[in-house]
Length: 294
Ligand code: AMP
Ligand code: ZN
Ligand code: FE
Ligand code: FE
Image (tube, rainbow, N blue to C red; front, side, top):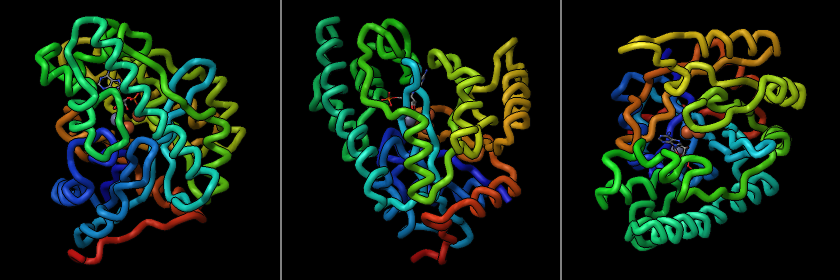
């Protein structure tokens, strides 16, 4: 069984539609894929309608959180998408992304970059708008060569010249909301240090005590580059140790964003036993197996 528990579609900042994403997931040989768009469940219906035979869809979302000024992401799986408190929180975060993107555009204009809201909203379509969409606009304008190159101090990195924060949920509140909505909660890429400051081990311990189910360990941003093409597992070993100490589940996933990032579907995967445990803990929604091209 090949299980990838973290992907993005055009419902947020991925480049494949939800239907394309599930087709590519099946073609990549995955048995289970989770659709975890930023702060939205909007892509689920389309993914379900297009689900290829033999592929199981885990409905989810990646919730934007912040603790003591540090941004962090919480993967929420198989919660009830209609549960009012969690729904309201997702809407709050998603709605705030619009004025925030517009504010970053003003900052870019002040820096001499002629990006417009029309351009960014065209790129974002009806997806939850984020920095990767602004970054794609910068690529279109020839300001930076790739989306990744826009995530620097000069442009859109946390605290960068054109960066603005958005409303983000307290992660303890996120855990409480997700559990109350019948879901399972996994802290995404807890050691993605190249994105900015990361959450402390003591905070992970407190989140575990508050009901956090697991941490994402096998992730492209946890592959340390010590030399040419060297894959040093130090970070992942440390996180595995932390998970063992705290009794947390260990997941692995691609965080696939289509062509907006280079990582492939299924580049990292979750052990079937962990997936089984996740589904055992769920009371909100259930994984949906493919029905054969409905
Ligand atoms: P936002 O939610 O609008 O603050 O944008 C955050 C998203 O930008 C993350 O979910 C990643 O998909 C992407 N991102 C963050 N840091 C980087 C980076 N260094 N390179 C490429 N993409 C990044
Ligand atoms: Zn993203
Ligand atoms: Fe993330
Ligand atoms: Fe993600």
